[in-house]
Amino acid sequence: MTNILRKGVILLLGFLVSILQQAIAQSRAIEGKVTDEKGILTGASINIKGSKSGTTTDESGAFRLEVPANTKTLVISYIGYQSKEADITAHIPGEILGSYYIKTYL
Image 1 (cartoon, rainbow, N blue to C red):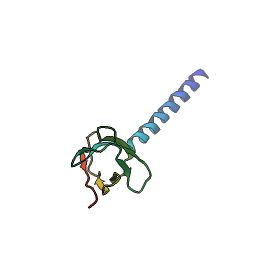
Image 2: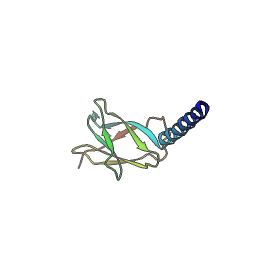
Image 3: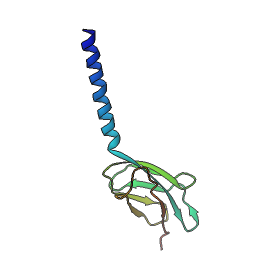
């Protein structure tokens, strides 16, 4: 009986690890920096297009955002500035997204 229980626990753990791996594979981390002509933009918003999910830049203008694997576009915005859409379809997981320069409203 103990042997059967042990096999059941091992099977259950294997199943849980498999589910966890799938969940991790379905998202990716995006990193970048937001600047303007004067330098960094602290507190700029970075959102997944069509979603309420997002983050803000830190004191160095940098951000990190976990996004679903099928995310194609981020929207970068800052009060008094034009919003910018960033295409992330060619982003390689683990690679820094880059620096995004946004302009003030004309």
